[in-house]
Length: 161
Image (tube, rainbow, N blue to C red; front, side):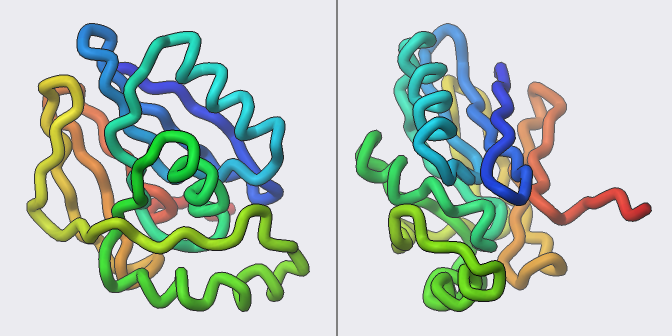
């Protein structure tokens, strides 16, 4: 599994594209694209690598991790997946934006389905295990790829100074 990282939005959130070179299957994790430039960097990478985006995954649904979900749904025809416990954050998206004085870039995208503990997804033949790790938010998830020895944790882990 290969990974490309994009730093996005005023919060410097990391958006990841996980992809398999052989099958060209891909997943976007935490699409935080806020500006047109950020969206175009993501699209350019996906197109240059001829990737087929299979999943739009969210570790949690705080605003900085979902800014690009509407864009990805429109562009790639996929709906975001997240834990049901975080769905309240989608319903309160406008309030999250107001706290930071930010306008909504594209609105808010409803979820296309829920992920729970022990769910398994497959990208290019590689297993992605879903871990539910409430704390940062009630629905925080980690995406663990045992074969590649990678885990995507969103904001569950942080380095406090």
